[in-house]
Length: 207
Image (cartoon, rainbow, N blue to C red; front, side):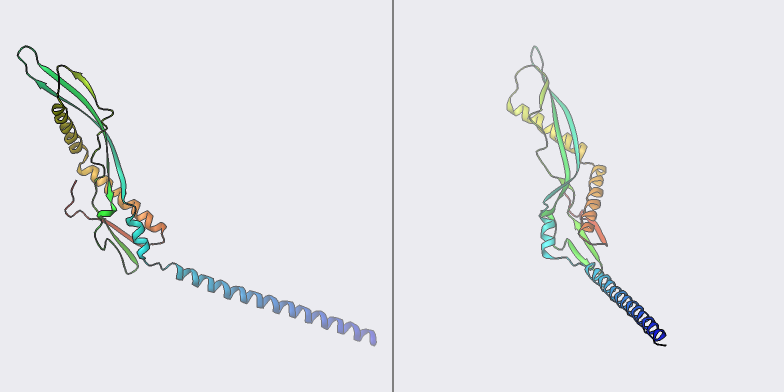
């Protein structure tokens, strides 16, 4: 009788141990689930991002931002009639025209939050470097007679105007605008903004 009684006590202890283990598993699972739910809520809260004055300042501090570079060359010539012979000068000019935006020209309120979106109005595309001709590479292709600094300056102005007119076309400006919108959209999304609307401010644009 006593032996059967002892085996029963051992069995009851094993059942009790199983129940304790099962209860502990349930408690751990409940705690884990509750914590994971709280973590998810915290992530959702972090996704709501507001524009700060520091962010706006950092974006304006970009300054000049190039979106299209065009290498060009121009050959210009001039002829001077003489009594016995004519003098001629032919020069070749090289230059690189950089099209982009200058964030210092952005107007007040150029970036703002509207609902869950960020609205951006970028300054117009402009020629970033006005002195785009590389004078170190400029050389005379043909030269006869003597020419003054005034003559050389006149040729320079012709080459400058021709290169600017040929490169600052509507098609090139549009290409630079498309690049600007795409790059700024990408930049803001990396900063955590999901809904971004970027456009160009072409009012009173000077090219």
